[in-house]
Length: 376
Image (cartoon, rainbow, N blue to C red; front, side, top):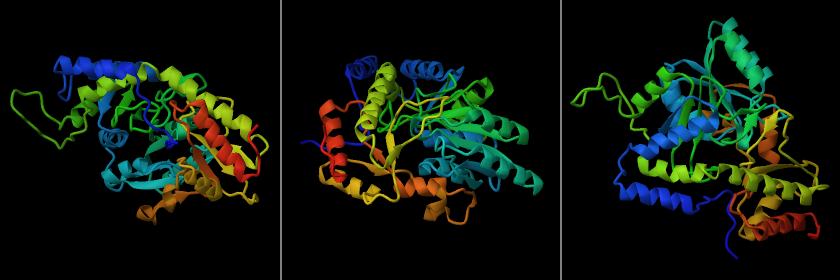
């Protein structure tokens, strides 16, 4: 049997058609018509006016912070329960991170804890200049209170929507919140360009600033003129062509992952585990299906993970919080213990949109067997 991966690329015929057309037209250079079209597609998908294709989601976050003027010794609050890219982008600017814990109801940034951080900063004369809220595992943050808090304390809000393309909060699309937001098209995301990302915003000047910085900050002169440091962070036309084929089937990909999530919920009902909660205001894209095992159960997260691996099925613990990462030791925190428990007891299950029913049944049977349950 072939290995079942956590979230592999799902490639169809459209991608081949777009790539071949780009090659045939010789638009393989860094910019071209496919990049413009892909940016328009993502602006529409996120409900934004402008989009700028970049080399990765990490690059997009870095560019957003840089464009906002965030630099050495500035303070940035961000979700602690996330992938390292979010924190790395802050580190690139020299700013000081403050790691904010999750709320149990969505696993995303806890607005009450965020307000404590921003209020404390104001009292101490050390204001927080920016906030990065992460839309975890394809579910948007509770943005209404987060936006109000950022506005109250004068902090710029950036949405890290790397995992959430196609999700929504109260009818508003992922990526539409904050001054700007960033998507990732890494190979494991719901759509991929093999590597790449997108910055989306409603601010025309900000979008132009991102585009300028991402193309080595080249001035509009006949020769190469530079008056400030830029970055080589632009998405290529060829990768954008591939992305056009991917985003055209976004709705189908979300439907497939939602069906996988529903199948897992059906078969694992009654087991001592809980799925990622979905608040009433949330419509996730179900990028990954995640479960948390009852700490009192003799069947642990590691028991199941290792059993799956023995059957050539990839799974993965939930994110190790940034405040637990050795590289960020000593950073400021505002913690409640939620993310620590999620990491200790949580597991991501295979969720790729290309999974067959037989693949899903293999995963279900492998999990159930650890609880002594036969698949019905």
